[in-house]
Length: 586
Image (cartoon, rainbow, N blue to C red; front, side, top):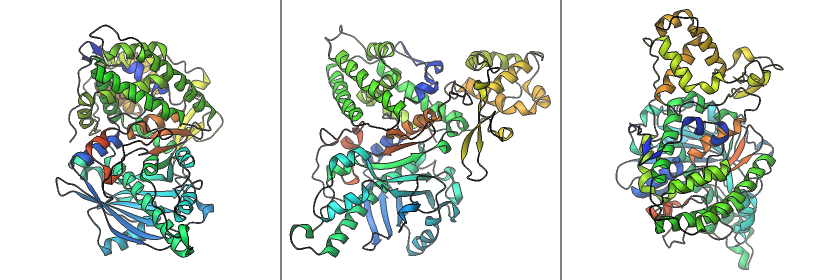
């Protein structure tokens, strides 16, 4: 079970940033990955515990179709997990980012143990069906992916002729395949979360899903090399073009796994308030701890090196979305200012990182402020890494029926002043409504005044519900209990429970209206994806984005503790992300 989250709000005089500052959509939508994110946390564990990759089954034909098994084994225990991968022939016209697609280039299952022939046959009959398949508790994660139409074929063709592919094209895209879904936590008959929480390697949030994506990355590298070798043999050209080249290790590090994420992810942060609180609380606690640290010459040098890397990373970050590209350009300018600030004559002895952070709050935009948070956390891993163990949550919210209405009104005034301040008489303040599409079974946003279906909206109009509750509380005796009140007003039970929860978990509530016409769901997506560890956000609208996962991450054969600890903000235009290693490939 996860450790209890820290409760102290002050570290050596540095207070945690208050929820009123942090829990705003604009700031949440400016988050970057940190050391606490789930991908780097997973790789540090895999390195620390000496997990090793094996490939016990590789049954792909010359066209790259068939199945394979990639297995991770713990070096300190008996834990074993296998990615069972199926590669399919797909009509390019059917290749889609949409979660509702029915065919993919590859489908995957993360399996508990190593599957035998019978289990591979069972999975081969069901994994290609994804949601329509039948699964069992040994199946931990279900996923699927498509080849990049822009670079996958180019890479195979180049390697088949003994040449490395064009580096600029690869780094511009960042992946060879992209997933369109990674399902865990009991969906479609796979293992329930309760089966995994007692396993240290999978107890943290989304660790099974991140392990799956990391193994998919290894499968993709082997797939393109397999295809290149097959093509070179079939061509049979004499001379230099006869033998395929393996994909260069530096180029492999340039590549992650793409992911297309839409509105389906957005409700998660609203529906899991305690989990959201614990994620944010760990991040804010880590920041306060680091801000309280003295600025030593080694830590200043370390931050300077990280900042230079982050500047290169942002220089390579190009998107088509005009709004996000304008933010990136502003971020680049702010990072140049931050670099000049860091290079200025050193402050008086005893200066702490808090001074630099406070300067950034006054002088830089939100993107640069939150990138600085990520960099500061990298400078003091000893203050940060243990907080990963506090980020899980049992998510059991209980209503307190004995609370008086007077106390409930006090909690509203203390934690929901932002909701009371919204003028709901203004139509745009509640123009949107969230619902689940009956046809596609996906979350959707509708216009309350132009579209039908608002009567089926999801309970995301928190400000409206809080104002409704506050108005009715004003007409009741302060000494009356919540139980008596809800006997008359059962429709307000959900908002009463939410208010009581936020009183105990202050970072549990997003302090903006999610039904306001100005709400940008992309901010919710980026917040969650930053905790995954995804980077290079590439919005395609304000409702879906592409990202890259594990870009810059060390390969399994080079996964030592030093490599696993230092791959944030990978930058490739000026050189490789990690030092070259002479380790034999797995």
